Length: 263
Image (cartoon, rainbow, N blue to C red; front, side, top):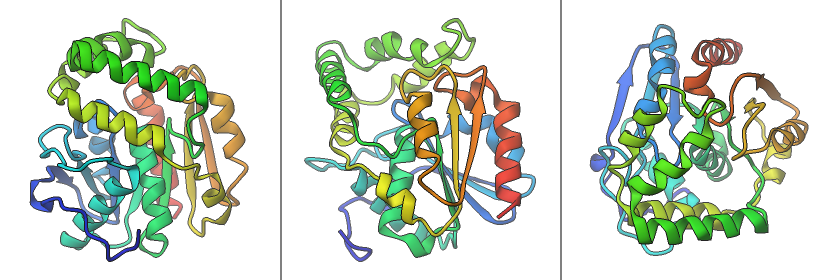
């Protein structure tokens, strides 16, 4: 895949929010989420930056993508076409979980078009065999029981406190995603390539934020990959699992402000 490749997706159907003024920052949400997961970060960052929060295809208010064998690189190309369409120059791209996979794919495909990249509860490592089996079981569950039932069983475990007040809101928000789209996302994540070599060759600063209690992306994995890039900024959230943006929003906001203002 190259920069000129086009994915059959109407960029005008990609919903996004734009807030603030200043250097460009794009926040990519994760699996089963939409742009609203970044509410606390948008409120903080928009004082100094132009913050874009798109809904990935098939999530939130964005149209689904009609494509067989969807890949993470397809989502990266869609985001690139959207960036070009809106003349968003030299953005910093930060992604949560699946959004981090898209951010890394973007950095690999279009290395000269970003100012920095960040993984928030995400990883450059490919899925282990155990993780792939878990995704297959998730896909079967989604097919049999639907989106809402799946999210009710999966989202609480993404929080350090399963009774966190935002658990129910995350379930409600994500339940609008079509089951077929969730299954495509799972397949895309399962098939993604290992990007750890990319980190060692990155020419731009790299941010990694890891949750000490994260069961979806282990803290040990996050820590080990922090040594792969010479320009890595690594931060630990000591009261979070996989959802630090809402579990410790104040801490995350300070980290992002510090990282972005240092570029």
